[in-house]
Image (cartoon, rainbow, N blue to C red):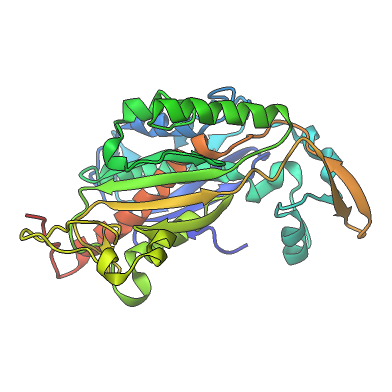
Length: 362
């Protein structure tokens, strides 16, 4: 299976399955001499792990990361960083009923047709549990580019949305994290939680949107033509399980405006009066806040009867079993941040190697 590596200079390759012995990865290209804060890495993993609240999966995983190489006395050595996270609470019997059945909107059918075999236990490699490796790598990337602030939060669940600019929200980490759904608006947060609990009781699932704001990005991050910053961010986000859409700046709403309404006119200092460009112009950061939104579909596993087919093409009835998220959004927030950090750290390293210096914002 190809496609298990992300990044060009700061590369992460992940391995493992949802119900295997462990998941882990290799980070290649991390500079030497970086002092790592392991407490922060574990905090990021805790934000992603199951069992955090009543609105996520109750799988009980400690998700403790063990580093195997590339670190000496808390400092990176410049050699590959190997890490592993052991699975502790996998219940493979929950999936025995789908051994010969293709679940609707899962990767069961496509994996088996492509490879001739699939791991039916929790989806195997296609499970969102693989993202735990991205969070480890992303938390290290965050520490390399700690001058850049990455803030993500849940901005909508189903039809319940925050209908105000992020400028008017309290986007402190403490404020976002005190909400089980990771929504910075207390009133909207309660409505979202109530909606998810109602959907869960019905045996169903629901999707929504995560908004990401990136502050303090220097001018000049990104390469024109095929390596545009927004294109790399889009690829990173669309590689996350359950993601169905990506938009930055004005996004699709911008199609409803005229050019005179949409253009970001300059101030004397080079900033812009508006930010419909989303902090990126010509594929290159312009010094304004970068903002984008990521759409997540409802979780495909539902506790309701559905019609599907088995390996022989027979129509059958199937119903979900086991422990599943009624909504992936709260646990996906640190994943979005981690993938963002992995994109930015790659550009940061490229610019450090380049003969051109980054233009600092005045």
